[in-house]
Length: 37
Image (tube, rainbow, N blue to C red; front, side, top):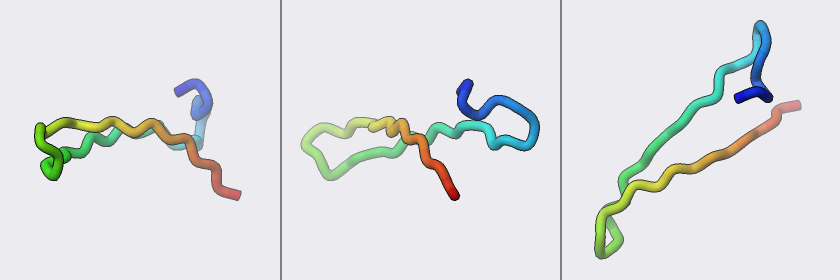
């Protein structure tokens, strides 16, 4: 989160998805940093 600190910078987001196609339902957390420009 420190990479996004400062005024006018977007806050980081966290998304959790549910996977039901596997034998045991699990949650996967993706951590991604993207730069535009």
